[in-house]
Structures are given as structure tokens and as C-alpha cells.
Length: 216
Ligand SMILES: Nc1nc2c(c(=O)[nH]1)N[C@@H](CN(C=O)c1ccc(C(=O)N[C@@H](CCC(=O)O)C(=O)O)cc1)CN2
Ligand SMILES: NCC(=O)N[C@@H]1O[C@H](COP(=O)([O-])[O-])[C@@H](O)[C@H]1O
Image 1 (tube, rainbow, N blue to C red):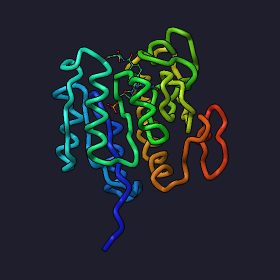
Image 2: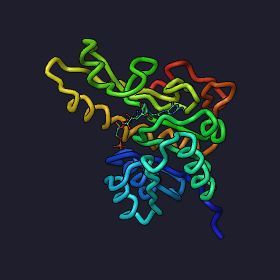
Image 3: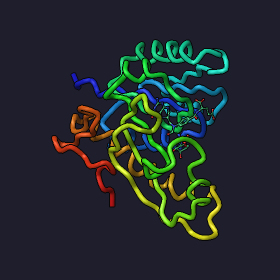
Image 4: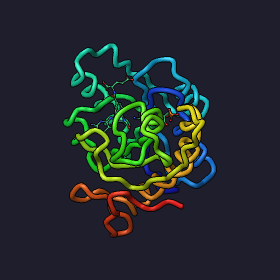
């Protein structure tokens, strides 16, 4: 009998391009895990269709049904616990999570953020980089902590910003890197090579620098 694979629960809010990269990596053998559930806080998003097409249980927990943030997070936590994940992966998930929720999943809660953290925490990162006149931008994968986008960075990938870039152009360039690095990080995690210790990201027993592992 084959050993059970590490279990990943993915949280989304929209298109699901990062989810699709994970699905493709599982199906292609680059990610040795099982995506056991996809949960969206918004109904009718394409990411839910991607999950259903891949035969993955897809759930919508509409945050609009829970005006109180703590109640939404408690319901979300209970749903996630029911699938017994080894990793909880935020992939375009657009809700700020309460400290209680984050602590409950501490050390196995990851996020991908479309900026070179600590620059541009929060939203609208591509337009902010353009407005700031930056010549370089990128993406960070990090462990999630209660501080919004403040968790220890695991890896970053950089892209150029061109003078005639619109935010959509830059987003496309960044998302090409996202699709490359997130499955890689998840494989590190499910293989037991990546952990969070004392609010630091540790890969193969080496504490990673603030910018994380330097991706080519
Ligand atoms: N406690 C934490 N929660 C979350 C983190 C985190 O690091 N700590 N990462 C974010 C992901 N994220 C950026 O990568 C992010 C998501 C959402 C928001 C935000 O302002 N959300 C608003 C609603 C916005 C909307 O619905 O369009 C809100 O929750 O009120 C900022 C950054 C995930 N959560
Ligand atoms: N603050 C979180 C955030 O902005 N996440 C960003 O949402 C986009 C859509 O993701 P998706 O195509 O995987 O749904 C991605 O670029 C991701 O970095």
C-alpha cells in the first residue's frame, strides 16, 4: 500500500492561476502532495472551476455571510481542520486573517505576495511600484504571521519594470514567476526541508536571509 501523500488545502479569492500551477505540478510529478480542498471566500470565481475540473473538493465560504471577521475566520478554520492539511496555502487569497487563525496554523500557513517584501505590503502592489518609479519589482513567498505580509520570506523572484508598463503588464510578468516558484516552495515544505523557527524561514537547516532564498 502506498504511503499517504502530504495534504494541501488551498485558499483562493479569484482566478486561481497559482492554484492551477500547483495542480499542474501535482499532475506532472513536481509536487509530491495531494490538494485535498480548495476554499474561496468569494462565490463564482474561476479558481473554483479549476478545482472542480481537477476533481478537487471545492468550497465557497462567502465572507459576505459573516460580517464579523472573527466569525468568518472561525468557520474557515473549522472547515480547514476538517480536511486535516499538512499545509494551508494562500493563493490569491484576499482576506486579512485574524491573529487567532494565523496562530492556529502557524508554521504551515504560506502566502505568495506580488512584491519584493518588505516593499509594498498590502494591495495594488504593481501600480504602486510603477507610481514609485521602480525599475525592479517581483514576488515573495513567505510564512504567514499575524503581521500583514510581515512573515519570514522564503524566496523572492525579480522582474524588470519597463517605462511603458501598465499595472496589468507588470502583473503578467510577476505571475509568470509566481507559477514557477510557488510549486517549488511547496515541494520544499512537503518534503520537510522548509520550516519556520523563531519567526525565521529555515531551509535544509539554514536560516534564510530576510530576502529568502535567492531564486535565479
Ligand atoms: N494576518 C495575515 N493575513 C493575511 C496575510 C498575512 O500575511 N497576515 N497575507 C494576506 C495576503 N495579502 C497579500 O499578500 C493581502 C490580502 C488581503 C488584503 C486586504 O486588504 N484585504 C481586505 C479586503 C480586500 C478585498 O476584499 O479586496 C480585508 O481583508 O479587509 C491585504 C493583503 C492574506 N491574509
Ligand atoms: N495580497 C495577495 C495578492 O495580491 N495575491 C496575488 O493575487 C494574484 C492572483 O492570484 P491567482 O491568479 O492565483 O488567483 C497573484 O498575483 C497573487 O500574487
